[in-house]
Structures are given as C-alpha cells and as structure tokens.
Image (cartoon, rainbow, N blue to C red; front, side, top):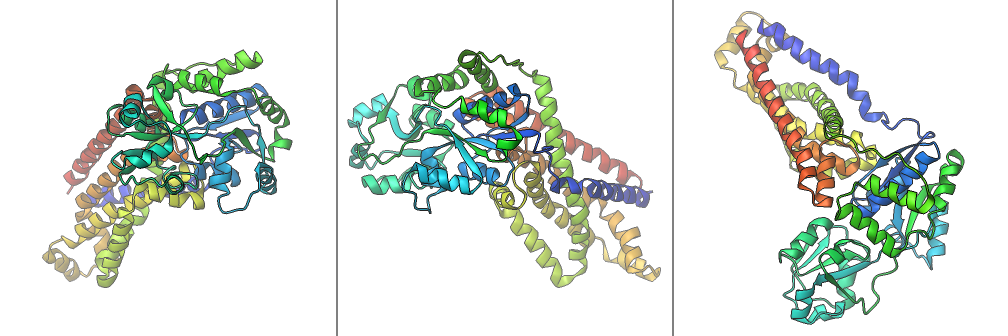
Length: 502
C-alpha cells in the first residue's frame, strides 16, 4: 500500500506541476490593447495619482488595472519600457537625476525628446513640485539651532535616516554629503513611512521628506533650507506609452486635463486624507475627480472577507505553482545527489547557495527575465523550495539501513526497481518533511511578492506599513500565519496516512 500511495502522491504532484508550469511564462493581465495597466510607487502620493489615472480610464469606458505599491523607480521604469504597465506617475527631478543620470541632458526639453525616442510621452506638469527636503522635529532644530542643511555640518553626532532609494540615487545622500561636506557617519536606510515614526520616538534626528508629505504638518517638522540649491525641481508628470495614443485616445485626452490642476496644497491635502484620515486612496481619487471635473465615480469599498478571499487565492496560486514545480524538480535531484558521490555535493552546494541569497535580491534578479507580477515571484519561490526538498530526499535515501539495500540486491532488483519499491517508500517521511518545510517557507516569503505586483497577503501588509495601520498589517499577517499552520497540519495528517500503510 505504501508503494501505491507514494506513487499516486508524487505522480499527482508532477502532473499538477506540468499543467501549471506554463502559467509562469504566460501573461496574466489579459489583452494589453483593451486593458490600461497603471502602476504606482510605494508611497501614498504615487498611489493616489495612480488611482486618479485608473478612474479616468474607467470613466472613458476602458478596462483599467492599477498595480499599486510596486517599489522603487527602476521597477516602474523598466516595467513601462517592457510594456508591463502603460502609465505611471513620475517626477522631473527623478527623470533627470535617476533615470537619465548617465546621459547629458541640457534641460527638460531634452528629457522629453529622449522619452519620445523610447516611445514614451510625458503628460503634465500636474501643477505641484514635490521636491526632496530634509526635516527635523522642532525641538531638535531648536536644540542645535538648525535652519538650513549646511548647519548639519556642525553636528556629526546627529543620526540621519533616509529612504533606501535616497541612499543611492544620483541626487540623494552621496551627492548631498559631498555638496554640503556633511560629516555624519550614522546614516541608516529605511522605509519612508517608518522614518517618521523613528523621528517621533527619537531614534532619528534628521530624515528626508517629500515636500507634499502630509506628515510634515502632522508632526510639526521643520524643513531645512536647501541653501546650496542641491535638490532640483520635482514636477509631477504621467509617463505614458505612445501605443495608448491609438489604443486609448480618449483616456489620453482625459489625462491631459489634469495638467496644472493639482497644486502643492491640493496634493498635500489629498495625501493627508489617505495617510492621516485613513480614507482609501480610491475614495480620495474619486472625491478629487468629482470636485474638480464633476466626474461621478461609483466607489464601493470591498468588504473585509472579500479582500481576504481575493488575497488568499492570489497567495495560494503563488505557493502551489512554485511548490509543485519544486517537487517535480527537487525529488529527482535529491535522488541523483544520493546516487552520485561527487555530483551530490555539487547539487546540494548549488541549492544551498541559492538559499542564502536574500529573497528581495532574487525578486529583483527575476524582474529582467520575467518582468513584474506573479511570474517572477513564483520563480523566486521555486528557487527557495529547492534546498529543503533536495536535502531531505538525499538524507532519506542515505539513511536507509545497509542490510535493506543488500536484501534488495539479493532479490535481484534492478536500480530502478530498488528506487521505486524500496528507497522512495522508505524515504517518504523525510521527503514529506522537506516538502512541508518548503511550503511553510514559501507562504512567508510570498508576502514579499507584493513589492513587484504579485498580490497575495503581502499587499495589505505593505499598505498597512504605508498608512501606519495595524489593522491592515494584521489583515495580511494573520491569514498568512493561519495558512502556514493549516498547511503544516495538512502535511502532518498526510504523513500519518501514508506511513500507516507501511
């Protein structure tokens, strides 16, 4: 019975893996000619602008999908160039200092010309300049008599905390430090939204700001004067693929109506509604379009259980595809490692090296190959599943007592028959333990897929961090933990059922 059960189990998983493997390389977004794909970065203002564009597309009777909170500038820029998104909000300073940092551009007109050569148009400016700035609490500024950025050079003991992107970008910390001769060594990279909380509790003294951040007024921060005019202007635009000029001309015209319609005070107020008043970004966008263009949007907040069910389906899809494919590949590799003396250490070594690569790094490595969305996330999860299954398959076979091997040989069983009737059945417990470990790891790691638009339980966690909402964080974290416990319990039951038939 154990033999039949094992055969059904492993063959069944292999069939499932084969059937769904093609999803990794197939687009999930539908017809790019009928669906306007809009992206936004991982901060509130970008999400709101993305929602405004999404609702404008829908008002012109186009299907629109908003891939919110996709991470940093390069993720969005590459996605736009690769056609994975059609539109996203960007800033003139970022275009010049980050995206085109290695090109000589005389002015923004040169930027526009270069974008045109890439098949991209810039719609705007929208009417506000969201420049970078440095800020501190009023009491910190008074204590050290801080009024301008150059004053910081007198106090090397001050602790700086900057967004991770600001730490590396062309107009960020490296060039700022050189321009002002800043001596600070204790400089930390962290999430933009978490920086405000660290500033409030005294963990940081100075952070980078976006000038339209609602938190500036909320925390009563002092913006330090950029006395050397280091930061360029950051006027907001929508970057749009030129294909939409033919595919969705009405949407382009609607988007152009936003030019000059959102000033700094209005954008700061919209940010405050979303960030401080906890109004969903889609509702904030709908209210703006109604007050500005008398455009009625049927905004309806999705029920909690509806959101959880949708995220559960997305999360399960990521885990099941990656885990099934890993089972299909890893068990044969584990057997091969156990059978080949020199090759075994190489296989285990390669799988071990993959396991040591940080999950965020693997996600980034996958983007150039598979783009954004579920596909690169599934491939990253597949790679993380390899080591536990390979190692446990290897150990399960290697731990079989020598007399059993000798008995199988004495019975005249071939290598394949020994593997089929003796080794795999006896290694079942160890193999299942490896699969269970891989499944639990995948469930937790899959939450990071939200950074590249893969959805799942990571999406409410990211949104909760951005909006400082414990409820939203728990909306993603609790179901993920429960799913991991459920999967672990399911494998425990499966193990008892299979071993019972020995």
